[in-house]
Length: 110
Length: 110
Image (cartoon, rainbow over all chains, first blue to last red; front, side, top):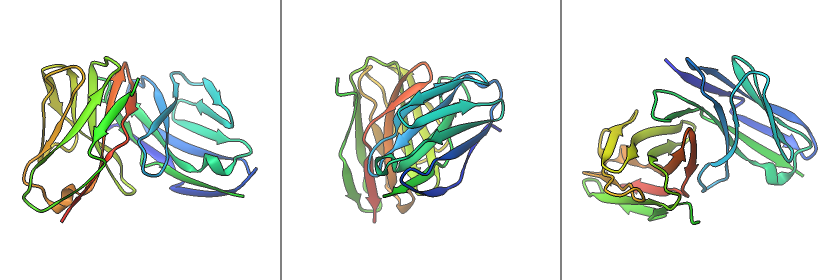
């Protein structure tokens, strides 16, 4: 059964304190690994897609990386506005359907 | 482009009542999806559509129905609302595997 698992469930950082979020997956024939950001009361917002092991993508203070078993979202020198829930997802079952992890709630304090 | 829009933003239903959650996209995407999101549980797929007139069940379809008469619209119907349907509902549309989400409808069944 395809599965996406995220850790930790919640992460509290001080402003400027870099860290990483983890997304491990067991999906046959991976056709991409997706990262989304979700602010409270809002819908998920697309961040990145990674397609092959070794691939990296960056956006401002965020960098996503992919290995054969997991993906990391590295946050460098975070600011309070980076506080959100970060979701990862992978295609499963055809018709471009995605399965989502439960997310990591990130809180960055000044 | 408005992207994906959903109405209403919030609704309270009594047990046994019915309602339709509206979803419209203006990006001419063939693929559309309905998810529910419960606290700490991630997004679960309810129904999806690969084009006008074509719909299929996702992971948690019981208690819901959908229709897709146009490319733009993908309404979700709740019949005989139950407390277990209290959740936040998100509609998404997509091209290839990338999905774009609406702002969500928060539903409370009492």
